Length: 493
Ligand code: AHR
Image 1 (cartoon, rainbow, N blue to C red):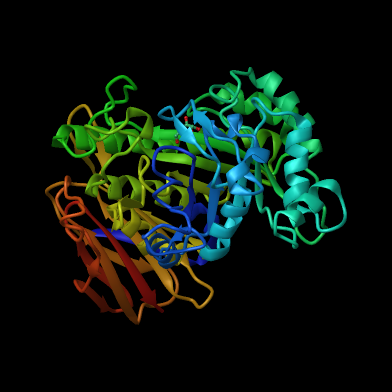
Image 2 (image 1 turned 90 degrees about the vertical axis):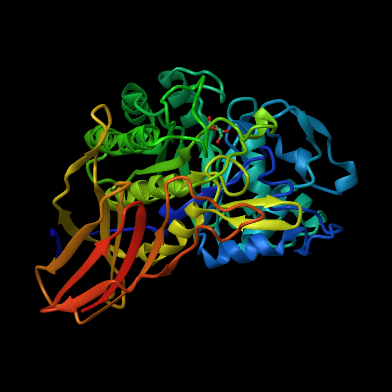
């Protein structure tokens, strides 16, 4: 029996709800088809947004959405996406699939989507190919409520009130698709551009995010923090899990063996080292942890689904993805003293999506179910917890058998989330509390074989169920986690 020690007397950092954020790019069928179908579509919609997708995301409690990219952000000129739709520029999305981008989804549509979802807005500005003036005017257009050329233009375009921009990214992957810059050059550009990302109201300050490192580029973090740390609220981090670790042949989303499963899980755990080492560098410049580490792109990246446009990054999603999500979310919770937001890539039909669509059909992926189960951690307080784990996997790819995190909500309910990463062993667990005694517990489980996934013909192969194998006795909570499963347990003290 493995003991999970929980210390309710030692509350740690707040787990910002934004850790459960998502990302939507003009890429493949994410925005168009996946979310936005237009008002004239036979697919039921409200102001062009699919009702089924919006409802599912509300149930998942999506807290914040990043848009319009990704690499697309540094080629996006926001003025192309406002005003009467028939006048909007048609262009080629050179980055993603070479398809026509008709700009029918622009600023107003994104804000309408977030209004329907009841989520916060994270806009990523164009530093790579846009001007300071263009970025500055976009912010003015969206957020200024007085009389000004841009505010007047927004009003002419049908929106009298200023919008709320919660987060603003100044460039994306500026070390790569966003301009191939050196850290010194980017840091100085960041200082210049962010100067004109003005706060037009004192009631709500825009949280400014600088472009952070590509995975383990610690030098980038060091230099950007040194030169520009005082001018930012957050620094981004991008890290994708590739099963093979090789961009040429990443591996299939659905066709893999147990060795590749364990390698994928091992590669996922690299996030722990990234969070620890980037945080340590940030600590040198920002010991008070004012600047957040914003993991605004993470998740699995496989070879695209056979027969689909390689530029659309469409992939299926199995129980293996559920494990990847569970590990990352537990890590973000545990590092929530520094990780202030995270955005899985991406929302619908792209990479590790929570939703897949085909015409009028929609399926929820295993990753969706993990996000929904973990929603109880949103805005809760991380608790000190520790679990004795053992090494499992293959000789080459050793991983811990279990991953967990624990939080306490404002009403005192304790939430334990745990994944058993083994493909064949069950583990009995006893949760013991350093203070107080458990009086009742309920649970939810997501379990299956590693390759199990939902399809449009069989949409409920992977779904959550009540987890009843829980005993509460002597103030302790005991349960057994089956192989390849994620559990969530709510404990009343
Ligand atoms: O999420 C897909 C792409 O991955 C994004 O556009 C880019 O920022 C990253 O390289």
